[in-house]
Length: 60
Image (cartoon, rainbow, N blue to C red):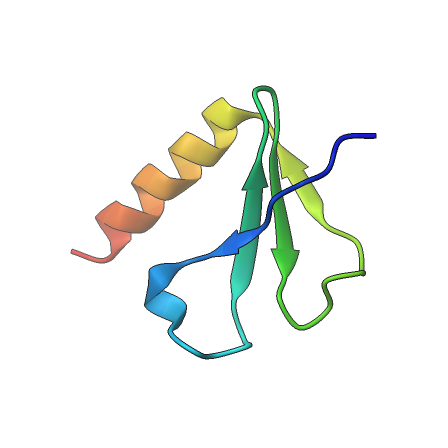
């Protein structure tokens, strides 16, 4: 099993209420930082890129 290297957004600061991601060549893993041993979601990189693009557009 591959070890995932989780990271949280720099926008999170010291907050523990955030989303963390781990990337592999084929999958983006997303989890709640409050429950690191709990379940997480997985997305293909293209779906994650679409989500980020939509989220960035929504900020403007």
